[in-house]
Length: 362
Image (cartoon, rainbow, N blue to C red; front, side, top):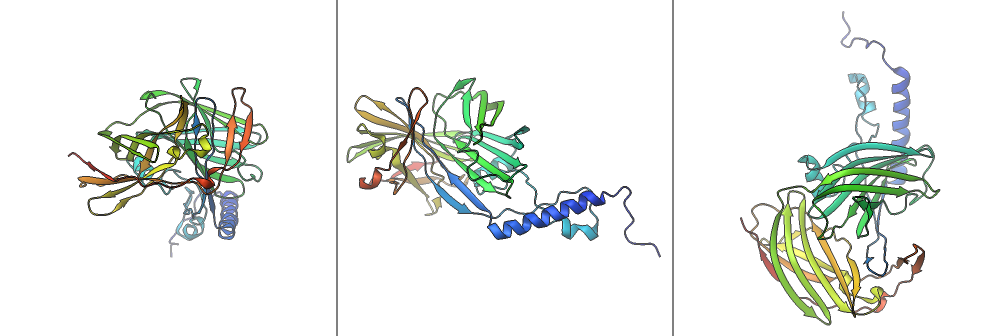
């Protein structure tokens, strides 16, 4: 009687055996380490600009994917345990990034550079109304230490250095493999298309450099708001609200008299947004870039949210202060020399802003 499964010619036994062993070892390590994701930010400042960030850690679990073109029914269940990395955006916890990847709104790069046994692959880039999102994969021949690559990539716009706010999240896949997502907040004067330069530094002096043309996605709906209020010395001006398939953002400017960025509450503003059905729109926070203008500290930012449903007609927006409970940062002078900043925000007092409504035109 004929066997139900014929032998595959040139079957790569050794490669499959090695892959299985690697997959099992990696799966055991994932179960042991509980796959920790590190999400953190940093602070850059000079006489013109200072950026504020948050710090948090989140436990996550990554799925297992099959990576073999030589599968048979007998091997399928075993090979399905071998973890590989697909789209970092698609595997993220961000609804907006998943939507962007699903709808083909990202630029797929896939460029890899290897320095000192560490390979960095720039996976995808998204440029929307919220800012610039980057995903990359880090693989090393040796075990990587915590925060080996710092807090993400520095960037240039058309070859010129630029500073701004954002966040960096790193997910540990194994002792030698990580994925990362970096968010870069944009300013109003950034062009719709430009050459984006990216520079990543390792602890031992390694440097990875990428350069790619990027273009902002289309079909972005901008709704003017022009809402202003002054509370306890804090001036808040909400300029507009932008919508697209990848998410929602609120653009604003805030200011407060003072000299010390650490003691200014105007840079700690967030927004709670609720739709007409009482459902809250998930916020992804974000930093605020600030500068000193005469006797005031002035901040600008685009706060990010999940995409909203097309049937919504009205949103209620409530500004509030997300005052830090600990932290600090690093300040850079004009010569590029750094100075650690201690935490001074423990004495800051909260205020209560008024809510306002935004109509969503059809």
